[in-house]
Length: 562
Image (cartoon, rainbow, N blue to C red; front, side, top):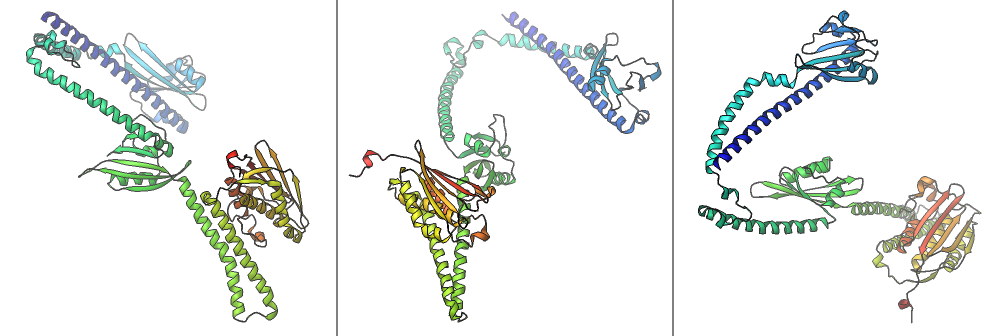
């Protein structure tokens, strides 16, 4: 048995060492060949670029060592050669690398010499005038390299052989079959030497403990993964070098990054300066926050350090989607600014006229006219406040009682047209109501405000002697209200913004028309309250068409009043 083990070790060692030497030599030769080919290509490109800039003068003034440079005309005649007399060289147009260069711009070839045991690497590149520059470099072949290093290899093999003999002799004396047959996962003491009993017993206990810990670790990891993956907020945990240890899908999605199993840092998920500074602050031991603007919306990043008593062991990063919050904040600021502006204008007028009246600067004949101005501005304030209250109720749906009732839209339109008849007569605008009786389930007050604001705008922004029409119709499961007029119309670039609060297409003209700038915003919110849609179409100079679509819902039997 000892002899077999000894011979086996010697044989394996010899094969392994020999194979390793051959493989290493081959790998070294391959690396050398690749590096040489790369150098030839690089040298050829550099020389070609120099010739393009300086012409043949560059070749005459340059000494080339280690490589052979040949310049070949378009016809195949050798113009220059760094190693041979050009006149003594034959036509080179049939060389493989030259043919490829003339045909496709670049060419490579390798030629072997069995007698010299060398390999020549050639790379050719076509110049702008059709001529070709070729760079060649000679390299030893693999057999030549082995022969050159044969003495060194023999010394190494001899030393390794001696070492292998000594090692095999020692190992063969100590190796025994029972030790080789020990099952480390389920060690059995009775199948081994009694001296190994304490070790095998301890190994068995450790295997059981490790298995239990692995099961608990897997359960904890699965629970953690399940919890984090169900979060809509992004979570990242990184070490003290910012290398990501774990992260849920929401973190990558919110930052617009792709999840990659390769090792990477937190910085690779977002390249902005704010994000980088936020992470660096956390790595420095300070909790930090920042806002990021991405293509998908606004993101809030909260980075906190995971501190031990003496150092920062890592960081925890939360990413939150605050797009809606930022939009609401922007809307709130804009609304506050607009309301302040709209309230300030009539109040300034009222104060100015009142001051004139108190100071006695107004003639008795002008008192009536100025009083009328005060009344008009006060009426404007009241209308503005009423519209703001309506919008506030619509913004907070819970504050609007959901006392839905069946509303006949045709009758509602007729009532609205009647209420606005005085305004229409004052502007010499005629009205028309067409369609059919369509009943929807909804809030009659809000539906009345929708109808009133659409018709009121159709009158206010109409031309003198114009006309507006209200049509009530339906399609399956939808009621349609269409209000069209022959007014001034709305330019196309303003169509998408006319439902914004206080937005006016022509501010200078709108000041002359009574209104708060909130009518269409009330329409939009009222339609949304009923889960409907509203759209506008307009042609400047010809008029506008507003179309409201509302779902038709039947009253449930339990909702029918007794």
